[in-house]
Amino acid sequence: MKQLTQAAFQRAKNFIMDQGRAFDQRRFEFHFENGAADAVLAALSPYQNDDGGFGHSLEPDIRTPASSAIVTTIGFQILREIRAPVSHILVRKGIQYFIDTYDEHQQVWYIVPPEVDGAPHAPWWNYESTTESFGRFLVNPRAEIVGYLHEFSDGVPTKLLKTLTTAVLEHLDSLPDEMEMHDTLCCVRLAETEALPDRDKIWAKLARTAMHGVARNTEQLTGYVLKPLWLVPSPESPLAAGIKDEVEMNLDFEIGQQGEDGSWSPNFSWDDQYPEAWRAAKKEWQSRITVDTLKTLKDFGRIAQEDE
Image 1: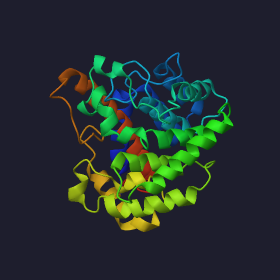
Image 2 (image 1 turned 90 degrees about the vertical axis):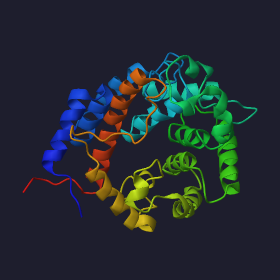
Image 3 (image 1 turned 120 degrees about the vertical axis):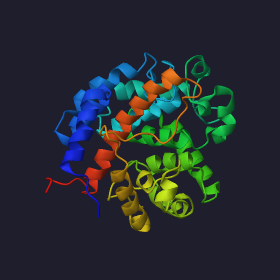
């Protein structure tokens, strides 16, 4: 079983502190140095717009400052990670953004606004193709948003929450077990919502989905695939037992993927379209992925306490 050495851990910390985004630096301190959640919230605040949504390249592949549903879900991933209180202004404004931008007729959120095309972005975020590419938004981002509406439910109309929950669960029942990767991840975040009813049914669905879609060897992990650690980010995950060997393989793989500068990097690129913007986006991805990877390695006990 591979371990990340203390020297390698220190290189990763140095990268985050020298080149990472401020909120990732605060996340690192939160997870490793007893840093305050309020410090993470303060660093996250500049990414929230007056309408309550998040933008400003919080998702590095979307460079518009305008709010979007997908970038706001990323904001809420961080809010959940640090267990932000439901009363915090970032949470309250973000939940109101979801309420205000919900399309009641279609029962969805549009994943990005037209403004996405006015700034550099990855080709998969071209506005006109998103409805088809993202399955009319019935899972991504809807399922994940419904989870946050349950978790931070103060101010969420009861009727809206009940209607949405029923719609999402019925739609998930209708889907084949072999699901699109990002849809699967939205369902994981939905199932991780402690306040959600019928979570066991979603976890059972995800267990079947994992058998179809998860990467099972290191060759697959070099591509853009569903990583075991995305399904099982900690040993406490209900999916951990079903793909235990794949998780251990993925942990060994990630330890070997650390760059010489201490970071972990994305395994995709869009520098052929916007080379300068991609350089900035890549650095932001490295910042986020490096903190995420260190947290996961810590949770699985894969960081050596001291070098021999």
